[in-house]
Image (cartoon, rainbow, N blue to C red; front, side, top):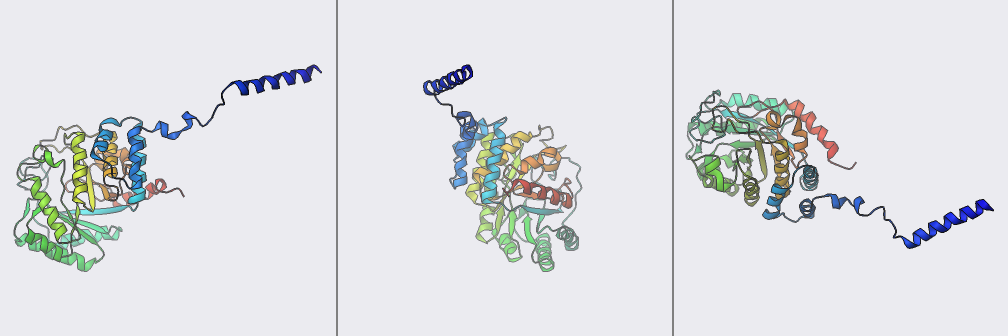
Length: 365
């Protein structure tokens, strides 16, 4: 009887507590995942529903989000990329004319205004370019960039005719190889010729906020001249690849302005570079961009340009090093492989394996 009475007392007490005390919801609020996500990031999830992010919201994210919240931002950028631009692209380039450039771009090793000690050479013979294209083609790369130093062309001179001949040879030998060229500021006559010689895409970078171009980049030409070239490419059916550089000494507002300027131009792809300070240039003592800031910048570019190709170019191996995997997951869907204009990159086979390893973050399967 004593045991029965004890059990009855315990049950009565439990019943009393359940009646008098409010129920405890184990799913309340500490179990609500949204409560752990910064409100600015939570609001930016509307990009997944097709709503464009405003400049004010992008700038607020840029100036506010830091620390552990950055990983939530990276996660969102990766989700946006997977929904709107899931395919991963790669490209390789050749420096078809090196150095002796009369422009004074403050970051550039190829400017004749600075003593950087790089190797210089005139326009390459078509055979040399074909040989380089053959190597990357055999590695499975199907986008090949032809790049020359210099301001550009107003009239098609001897060198420009060599370029056109080279493009014809490349297309004849590798018809499925997408040709991208970067020749500087061009006249309408020269743009029309490129369109007639198999050019699919043209690279012309804004580099930074258009409003800060003269301060941060160059004074020997204007951002307006570059934008005019971009618009001429569109007129003749050539797609644009237009991006910039981080780490020049720009502000977060400048980075956001560049992202929106590129969105307004509606280009196909955006190469994003991290400044590698070159000895001899005005920026040789510039502090490198931190991986955290790079991740935030890339993620913001993906939120502003959800459907576009965002390409990680210079600085991936040399500046970001161990963080390049994280940065690719910050909304990027393209990379340059095999080297840059005046600095070496990674082996194409290494990058192919690296890209394959990112697949595990790309689906729920």
